[in-house]
Amino acid sequence: MFKGLILIDNENIEYSLDLIEVVKRLAGEEATFIYGLGINLSCEAKGLDAVIHVDVPKIQLKDSRVVTDIVQQVHEEYQFDSIIILATEFGRMVAPRLAMRLEVGLVADITDIEVDKRGKKLIRPAFSGNIMASIVCESSPIMASVHPNVFHVDAEELIAVPEKLTFVPSKLKASSIEVLEIIECEENTVDIREADVLVSAGGGFKEPIDQLQGLAKELTGLVSVSKQLVDRKRAPREIQVGQSGKTVSPDLYIALGIYGSTQHIEGLKNVKEIISVNTDLGAPMNYLASLVVHGDAAEFARKLSTKLKG
Ligand SMILES: Cc1cc2nc3c(=O)[nH]c(=O)nc-3n(C[C@H](O)[C@H](O)[C@H](O)COP(=O)(O)OP(=O)(O)OC[C@H]3O[C@@H](n4cnc5c(N)ncnc54)[C@H](O)[C@@H]3O)c2cc1C
Image (cartoon, rainbow, N blue to C red; front, side, top):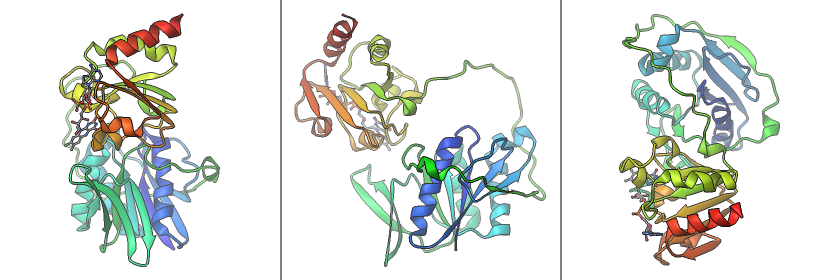
């Protein structure tokens, strides 16, 4: 029996449950028993075989060192064959800490899995995305982090009600987080990972990004960007597509002045159609596109918007 643990991210329950697919693929032909670790979890997390519930004071949940402590203690009790963590900003703080504590390797940001006679191969981009590396972990548990939206579990797998287990951690470190001030943020209801249409701007889109909101609205979609625009402070990070941004899977992706670097392409998963607008016909993005428009990105966006309004 292959025992896998998924650390459930309370703010990303659906993406956490997609990690069931990761454990199943890692197990290969072996039967699986998949645990979820829910810290202060209030929902049922259907599809897992069991959920181990841990309750801690709310502030401790924000401290990656405390969460690492909890996962370590739970692993010491259950001895998992693999531990899979969602590569959110928080997950990326927990995963390497935990790997160090357990003295095992961590394969970060995996995009695929292959299991054959030579072992369980975790596949991830390496050398700035120029090659895909297959990594076999000889240590146990196998630890990996996975970007949200990279793997998907079938909806019919998410029916079974998990067994409910509880775990009381011993001697947790006091959190070193101190609350200095509470600032209410506007709730961000926009998530490019959920969009069916993305109007995406890159370095070749020379106008302010806000100008694309109208076009995105006409297409009932959202605006996204390449990293270049985030680095140049022209757009917020939450709407960045790519390796260090979000993985998206819209039906239509309109790439406005995006070169198509490997790091950007990595964020495009199961995209049905791409329209690439670029002044350079040789841009790699064009080779992925079903339709290439040779010309200025801003002018194209303006004209398309006017046409759709008409
Ligand atoms: C570790 C690491 C992680 C990274 N993560 C990401 C990531 O998550 N996401 C990401 O996007 N990048 C990422 N990058 C950066 C990536 O390598 C590229 O630098 C970046 O994607 C380039 O953005 P771009 O294509 O928008 O801009 P550029 O490379 O500047 O390309 C602009 C494109 O627009 C075209 N163009 C120019 N003018 C016009 C015009 N008027 N109209 C139409 N087309 C025009 C050009 O021909 C070109 O093809 C990462 C890099 C590293 C090293």
